[in-house]
Structures are given as C-alpha cells and as structure tokens.
Length: 202
Image 1 (tube, rainbow, N blue to C red):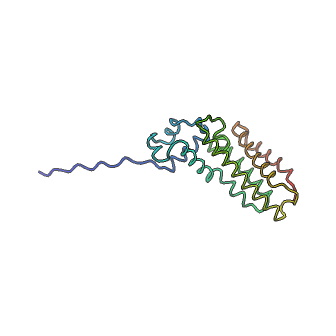
Image 2 (image 1 turned 45 degrees about the vertical axis):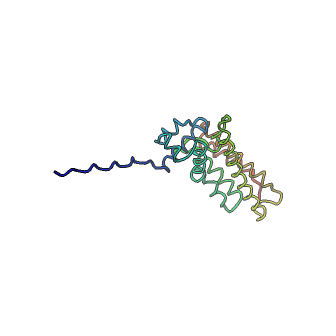
Image 3 (image 1 turned 120 degrees about the vertical axis):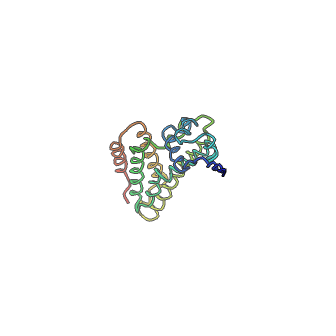
C-alpha cells in the first residue's frame, strides 16, 4: 500500500508593505505621531506589532517612511508647483495644492506635515524635529525658486525672496490648520486668492 507523503506546509501569506505603509500614512495624518498608538497603527495596517517592527523598524522609522510617502503622494503638489514659469504661478499652485490636499474627501482634513507632531512629549521629539526639517525644506525650495525669479526679472529687484517664501509657506500651513478645523474648500480657496492679490508686480 502506497503511503502518501504529507504536503509541505506553505508559508503564511505575507502582507503588502506598500499597502500597509499607505494605511500608516492615513493613521499618522489623522491622529498625529503621538495619537497614533501601536495598537491603532497595527490594526489599520492589518499586521502584528512583530511584523511592523520587522518590516518598518520602530515607530519613529515608520513615521519617517510615512512622511516620505506623504511627500511623494499627497504633498507632491509642491514639487510640481516649483516648475511653474512665474513666481506668481508657483505661489498660486502651492496654495491651490494645499487647499485641494487638506480638504480632500478621500483623506483626513489638514496636513500630516503640520499636524503630525503638534502635541508630542519627549518621546515624540524625533518626529517633531523631523517635521521641522520637512517644513524648512519646503520653505527653502520655494525661497530658492523665488531667488531665481528675481534673477530672471520675473520678480522686481527689490523683492525679498525669503520673505515671499515665508509668506507663501506660512499661509499654506495656516490653510492646513483651518482645514483640519473643518473650514471648507471654497472658503480656503477664496482666502488664498485674496492673499495673492497683494503679490508684487514684475
């Protein structure tokens, strides 16, 4: 009588790291770094704490990866805006992008980069510092673009690229805070349009 060999036990089905990271982005976006507990994160990502650590490292490293994904995805409007042919076009695209992203019906209101570490204690210092660096990087990119606009004659010689960049980015982050508080898209876009009416002529 032939004895059948037992079938080898298959490896358990793994999870999709990209999908899990996308879910982590939404959790951090909605709850911030401190509010996103490991229990909330792992439940949303559909994985165990052990799997999360194995795939992404600790919570700080997961947050860094989530912020990178957010920058490449919902916040990618900034990079696209920098390609606009005029400084006013850049400012207009930045503000339109932040209004669109922070009021999207498919994601949480507000901005992960603004809200992510607003209320963190010492344990969240790394996330806080990372977001300061993230916001400074955005400001520096806009400032450098406006410096080129002065050199090209698109902005008047007396224009202050650093001040204009701070104006645009501060307004963008303010819009994000207002969006998180429930202010609607149309009102925020009206605010952006009103702010840009004071833009210096070339």
